[in-house]
Image 1 (tube, rainbow, N blue to C red):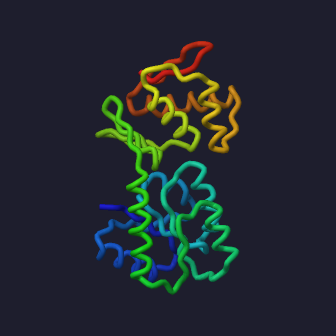
Image 2: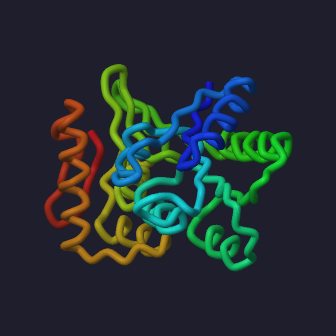
Length: 220
C-alpha cells in the first residue's frame, strides 16, 4: 500500500484528504510538527507528499526546495493560490504536479495515480549483500534498518554499486556528480564518502567501501 503524507495546517482539509485517500487504498500520514517538517518527512519516508504552500514556520515552496537537496519523493502542491508565478516556482523547485483548491477529488486521485505509475516505471533498485538500494528514493533498506542518502551520496553509491567488479576512479565519480549539476572537488568527495561509510556502518556494513589509494573506490 502506497503511503502519502499530507502537509496542510487546516484540519478540515486534512480530514477530507485523509478520508479520500484511505477510501482509495492509500495509507496516510498527517504532518503535525511543522517546525521540523523536513526531518519529519525524511523520517516517515512517504511514497508521495501533498504539500500546501501556506504552512506554519516555513513556506511550502521553500520546504520543497530544501527537500529536493536530499530526496526525490514525489510532491504534489495543493494550494488555494491560483497564481502562475506560484505554479512556475513550485515546478522549478521540483514539484511533480500542482493543483489548486477547491480541487476536484477525481482529478487529484488521477494525478496521484499517474505519478505513481511514472515512478514505478522509473524505479531502479539494486541489491547487494542483504540490503536493497532504492535509487529513486535514495533509501538503503534491510530487514532491520532503513537510511536515507543525500543527493551526492545517492549518485556516488549508485555508481559504485553499478560497478561492483572494478575500482571506480575519483575522476569518474566527480564527473558523474558534475553531470548532475553537483560540483565537488576531491576534498568534498572524501567528505561525502566518509559520510556514506558512516551511514552504512550504522546499519552494520563496515568496510563495504574499499579505498584504493591514489586510484579510487570499490564496493566489496
